Image 1: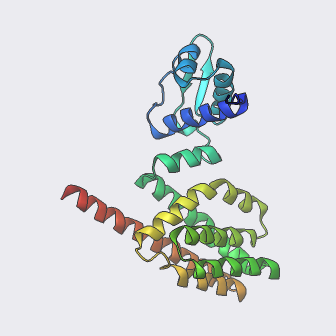
Image 2: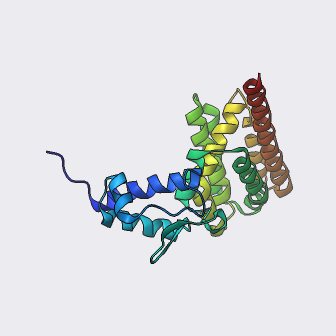
Image 3: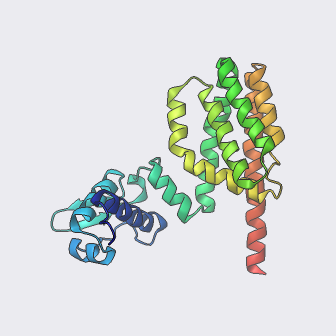
Amino acid sequence: MKKPIAVRSLYGHVMHELGQRIVSGKVKPGDVLPREETLAESLQVSRTALREALKVLSAKGLIESRTGVGARVLEERYWNQLDADVLAWRCASMPTDDFVDKLVEMREIIEPAAAAAAARRRTTVQLAHIEEAYNAMDAAQTLDEWSTADLMFHDAVLHATGNELMQSLFSVIETALGTFFTLSARSAGDFKYSLPYHQKVFEAIKRKQPEVARKTMQAMIADSQTNLQRSRSKARKKASA
């Protein structure tokens, strides 16, 4: 006999199911979700689990519930775009060109400044973490190993800034960045193509050269964007052929 699924795990499943539908555009802003009993029946869960899921989605800014109206999907501007679940759903349902471009723009604002700050403030221990991540990238044999090490590298650089706000921001956008790094490496053919950039960033931080670290990080981000754009262009040509 199967053990009954706990309400908590049930509402988590429902939250992810509904969240993905909303973020992917299957359910659009302004749409009103079906009545509780109808929705619970279609999802095969209790109304208690459904209500818990709707509360969480409301807290994330995806829906609002009104008495007599029901749960209505809100416009994107109300969504908590930096919520880990919302980012994960966007990554799963996209990544569209628009989302990737916005992520690149966010990286351009944050990461060059972070590299410069790390070059000014890093400790010996923090530098060792950056080097460890770089060595893992160098030793990577698969795309997955590379992407994991790449994420570790950028995480270590942000921690070396000594700015806990930057560190918190990275932990929030980690899912999206992980997807971006995988896309960027895959589009380049040789997933280790950006290793020299990472080496130069590491060396600049090691030698405490803030401007060199900043400019190299800018160049790295610009290069990855160029590779992604080239890959998109090829995909479009194939699709239209």
